[in-house]
Image (cartoon, rainbow, N blue to C red):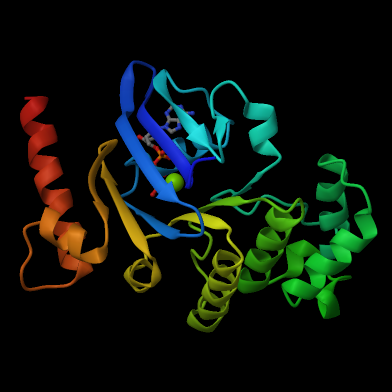
Length: 251
Ligand SMILES: Nc1ncnc2c1ncn2[C@@H]1O[C@H](COP(=O)(O)OP(=O)(O)OP(=O)(O)O)[C@@H](O)[C@H]1O
Ligand SMILES: [Mg+2]
């Protein structure tokens, strides 16, 4: 069995004839937290949706958790937790009811125990009767994480999970991710927050659908040609360069 949780090559996707993911190759070792960076519209969500089997790529091959991500989508969905970019639960159901609903969708045995554990793990037990629609951003995000952990996934794809969440709640969220990674779970997390990028073990930077840098923070700085400056400077520089290339190629 491979040591990579994600090992895919040459992923491509077009919408209406427009190429939005171009020849993306990703290798992520098990138990790592990998930050997925890139400007709006660069292809992060599209890539994640392909990795978890929700969207069929136009091209590309590879494996996630040892499964062929194109041909074993059903099996893969049972082992991947995907947190969508937009809060995706029923606002007029309570926290517990939402989790119970997800547990039914996954046809989990021992539903009550699983829901109880998830409530405990994410510190949601005291609020379990509260309607999801009345939760603040940080609590909604905890509910979303609890829901995507219910079926014990080995790979988490988290799409901007902390957007609009306050610093304290974000800090707690990242402590949770560390605990999960220490238990061997692999995390690919899209974020626009540089402080979060700095907490990751590795980074992938994408722009105009192409991976421009991959590896440590230092690797991203080097790819951007930055000797003095921080990660944000590197991202801005990579975006500017990609923009020039893209504009040149489409002139
Ligand atoms: N279903 C779709 N149909 C048509 N175009 C789409 C579809 N999904 C995404 N796109 C386009 O593909 C491009 C990449 O979108 P994607 O959502 O993957 O970007 P992103 O990196 O996640 O951006 P953000 O940081 O804003 O979330 C965008 O131009 C978007 O408009
Ligand atoms: Mg997105």
